[in-house]
View 1 (spheres, helix red, strand yellow):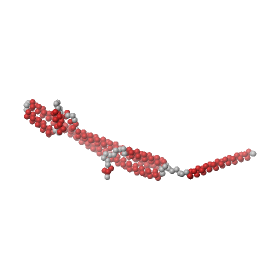
View 2 (cartoon, helix red, strand yellow):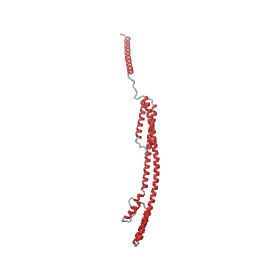
View 3 (spheres, one colour):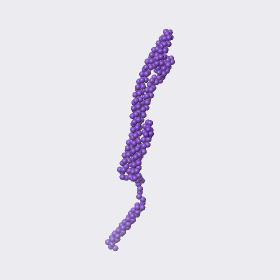
View 4 (cartoon, one colour):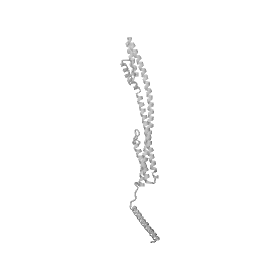
Length: 266
């Protein structure tokens, strides 16, 4: 066999092999296409219509919660202003009561000094045998006590008379504090109102924080439509829902305004 004939046979063999390979690849491709046509199309885990409906629902819910948080926060702010005003008024009244109590105590001290002088005069008169004069002075003491002494002061005076040593009614334990009791109670009321106002201020600021979170949720729900890929849109939606739920749970841990009643507004 000549060299040219041998080369021709080799070329024909190569062409046969190539043709066989093409046929195999073509059959494989056709088989894959048939399987793809037979296989059902993969559906997304959530349709675009359902996602848009959920977004609309949560937009409405978040808007309502935002309005609620804003309203309750404003009520706390109103309570804060009211309690601060009441606290200032109570403090002013307490100062007036304190000054009045001090004046009353000074007046009672003057009465006690007069009684002490008269008691000395009684002792002096009795030492001289002037019992009638001592009796008149004693009646004068009774008149002074009837006209100028409160029940508490009279009780303190009698306590001082019963002591074996020279005692003053103002030495009686706890008596001086009785002058300032009403003023002290008023100071405590003012302090309590101030603390309530501070708590209202804190609660109002916390509700403002909740409102800010709700605003962020509204922003995220508003930009969901920017994303074309549904999985990306759904991911942003989930983040917004998680923030909304967390803010709502946090909001319900904050105390309501003092005396709040929804029925009182209707």
